[in-house]
Length: 210
Image (spheres, rainbow, N blue to C red):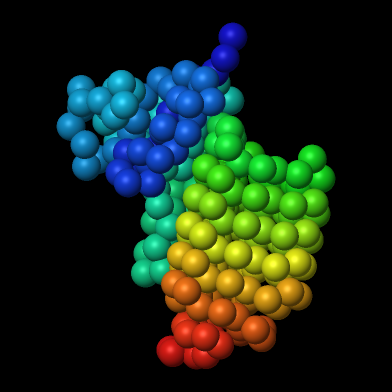
């Protein structure tokens, strides 16, 4: 028997996640979000309360999905991911049916790959990573835990992305570039050289802005 699946967060990213899972034929038990009214529905999935709903649940008996979106100015997605991983919950994989994923790519169960994304051979996605709509990751790219790859991002071959990096929509990163932990890459940036941890860069070519 399939385990119950709960989506934590029913906002903008959460709705994309819910739609992706329903399209893939995954049965969802409920949405947990303090900002939504109990008894409401998101695409037919009932809102059951906030994540305290799972406090009395055996972590081995259910699966969860992190429906919180990524932001360069908030670590809420990371905190939710770590909270449930630390408590021993398993994660329902999120893989859109239209995504092209190499048989030789490696992904944590908690990683999410959205519509039209491309993952070539040797790609590695860490825990709680999001690869968003129509992002393209070429051979050998490695994405650290809790990083967020926004729509339309292009990573050329062998790019190394540290933990907790935010890559803005449409950013392009040249081959073999390394991006340090916690860096923020602005939307539309063209990154041609390594980015140290914690830097914020933007522009073409990308340069430090803070």
